[in-house]
Amino acid sequence: MHNNDFNGKPHILVVDDEPLIRHSLRELLSHCGYAVTACSDGKEALDTLKQHHAHLILTDIKMPHMDGIELLKQIKIINKNTPVILMTSYASIENAVKAIKLGAYDYITKPIADEEIKILISRLLEQERLKEENIELKEALSTTNRENFHQIIGKSLKMQKIYSLIEAISKSRSTVLIQGESGTGKRLIAHALYKCNEQEKGKPFVEVSCGALTDTLLESELFGHAKGSFTGAIKDKEGRFEAANTGTIFLDEIDAFSLTLQVKLLRVLQDGEFERVGENKTRQIDVRIISATNQHLEDLIIQGKFRKDLYYRLNIISINLPPLRERKEDIPLLVRHFIKKHSKNISKKIDKITEDALMHLINYQWPGNIRELENIIERATVLSKNTEIKVEDLPEFLRIKSQENKGAFKLKTALESPEKEAIIQALEAVQGSRKEASKILGINRTTLYKKMCKFGLLKNEKRK
Image (cartoon, rainbow, N blue to C red; front, side):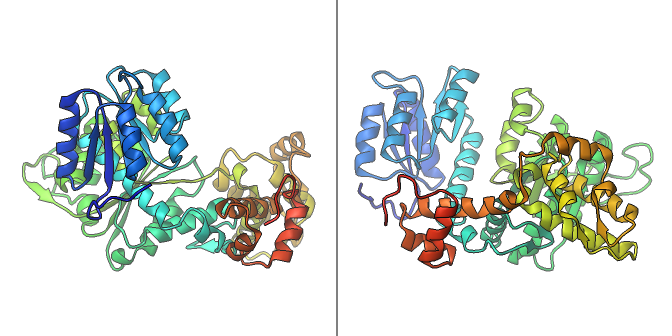
């Protein structure tokens, strides 16, 4: 494959059998600063890809000779990492699901809104840029010894990747969407994003719990209001956006926004403009927005409760926090941290937990995640009559649920799982070379060989 000279511009390949759409997209994207090649069918697109690398392919689904789904399959054979966005006038959930399962990045319906496609492409290319900076593997694997990152506790590989992602965007003011179940620590991630960012030092950080306010109060809280604009508005009030000007605002539970408020937020994101409630004066602000949700915004979009264009604006960079049940190897660390914290708060000497009690915590599925774990450890420190937490100090419901899952996890296995995962990913990154994998992991080849034997990773392997 040859690299053509696009003067450093990202190269986008547009594939559509309708000339008007091809030309309009080429004109729009060229104006946005991209290098654009337009093809009229799938065969022409494949011929182009053999000669020139594309950073992104935007293809219609319904085309003669070779439809977009088949073209997607062929593209993934040539280069599985090339992102593909599918366009269609015949929108259906079945086609969308089929396309995503085959590896499409996203799915967009015609007629295509200019702003929507620009945001979608901008988000995609930003994510690809971060991948190129090697945040997904090498950096994460080389820092697996971090157990505490800006008050976030966890040494699992999933958390190491999140730490590395936060560091990778520390020089950017990109908008970030944090997604995860309730109690997974989204607020701590937002604070870490702010603290790590070199451009935010000395600038304000404003936090708003959107779900705790009614729609009317939330609008006034965010955008401010003029005196007399509603009952109780006895004076002019500055909103949280104004308070965060030049800095960062963290909008927790972004899904609580009504459709009307979503329009106002979209305007802030697009133009940095808003008006206070009951006032006609347009105000300008420069604010970085970090938002969080425990809801699946894609489902809310389908239900008509969340604007797709706003979702694209908020989701320039996405951080997906795993639930605690998917990072059980972090439970012993978290338990020690919470024992220390809460025994200190009540001036009680408790410094450990029995292995039996810890196994009960590991076997439990934690629907309330880290918040639930902390509450249970706080309760146990209060009830404990000794210097260690025992099984009888844990709630009865947890002991029952834990017994139901007994045997599903062993403490040793839980602690070893991130190590095995790190070795597998390191080997995959260097096509199975033990020499290169040992460098990434920071261990010698003999140690790597022993660990591969231990984890059963030598089967069907050609020695390298």
